[in-house]
Amino acid sequence: MRAIDQFLNLAGAAVAARATGAAQPAAARLTALLADQPVATSPPVPGRPAACAHLPAAIALMAPSFASPFTTLDPSLAWQTRDIANAPPGFAEGHANARLLGPQGLEERGGLVAGFSLVAPYITYPDHDHPPEELYLVLSGGEWWQAGGAWHAPGRGGIVHNPPGILHAMRGTAVPLLAVWFLLPG
Image (cartoon, rainbow, N blue to C red; front, side, top):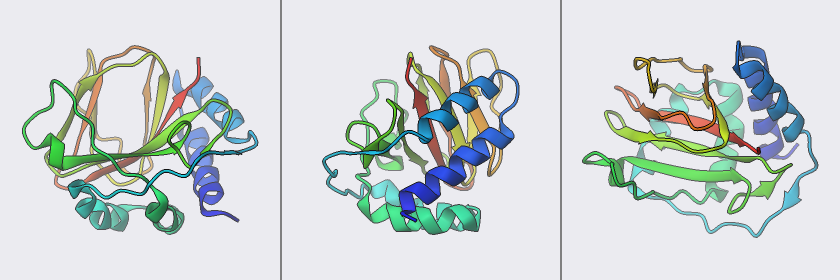
């Protein structure tokens, strides 16, 4: 089985098994979209910004069942940084994202956009919002925040559900935050 299929099968099953409340319909949609036939894209050019130095520590915190396919996928990922207007000091060097599915990803499936976020210890990915509904599967650690709530740590294997348009943020703690995220098509 291809590493991307192995990883996505595990991630989809984990999200479906752990989603509660308002996240359950999103998890069901995610499962259906992940079952769509993959369509090849132009392979991205792999990249390694400075924050990728934290990947070994994040991988060491992952469940072994996820670590193996992730480690196989990682060399083909195009890790990049983002410029965000409200970014805190250290953000440019302390974060990286890599697209897995969708445009600029390794392949496409049913309009789903997915990728990985890596945030170094004690770095905050600043508050932002977007129209698509989003699900995160926490792979290492970290904390998440949504407007109107407090920072919380879902823990390895935890799920974070961001309804469309909600202001949200995340941050690394004493360990790097590594998570896979899924933006569901409208």
